[in-house]
Amino acid sequence: MMGIGFPELMIILVIIMIIFGAGKLPEIGSAFGNSIKNFKKSMKEADDIKDDMDISKTMEDGDTPKAEIGEGNSGENKEESPSTEEPAPPAEEPQAK
Image (cartoon, rainbow, N blue to C red; front, side, top):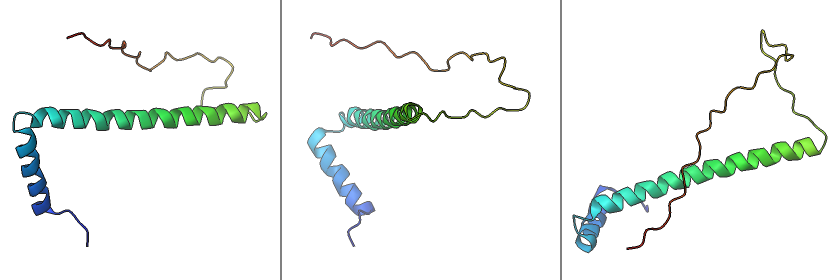
């Protein structure tokens, strides 16, 4: 079977320590974690965009999505709730070194 067990992981870790040194490992780990975080964020945004496109296509076809009316809400006096989305952080400009 082709599996990576504990001994194999230890050998890989030793090789990485030899190549990069112990001082660089925290930086490498942080960069790897940020990469995974950004990847998950972009995948979620892509799914949201796809859902928005599906809704707009449905509305263009003439089918309007029906909103569910809960108890005590007849739909006559609709108040818009404040947006819960956080504003996008300002774009970072590259710094000259």
